[in-house]
Image (tube, one colour):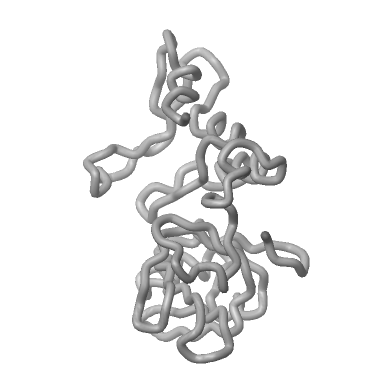
Amino acid sequence: PISARNSGLTARRVIGIAGNMATRPDRYGRALAQVKITGADVWIQGALLRQGAARARTWADNRAMAGAMLEDEAYARNRGLGLWRLAADRVLLPQETEGAHGFQIVEGRPWRADADSGGAILVFAQGPDDGFTAGIDGKALPDFRIAGKDPAALAGRRVRLRGPVRYGPDGPVMRLDHPEQVELLKGGGAAG
């Protein structure tokens, strides 16, 4: 279990907060922070991700260490460690999001990307009402463009998205509010 791994990493050790903490507690009242063991070169989140005991997740107001977290997650995922052995935690294809809920990682190619001042939508299926979409908040569009992830340029590109999946009128949708939720991938195949 994750709690056992975490207590094994931190037992009888002095820990410290690294980087920026979230500017406000999350909806559960938790303060989000990066944790390091004081006097050692051990970053707790990185260790858990490399063991496959966690998945990388960022928030619009707490993106510290996103690149390093994605690298450590990829290490475990590519080796099938920990939760990456479980079907429930695997990377989904867009057509597999029907029935999925909560935090998911979805990999595929958007067929179309539409944007206006109110936001953008990435459409992963060609037919109406039959597939996964990702909506990008209009306030976040400048950040996406600065990060080289302009929604208009994502159509046809292989991407990996991460965030909560909910159901809209046209099926499963993921809300994206910061560019670290989108990884630009190389190669032609999709994940399984």
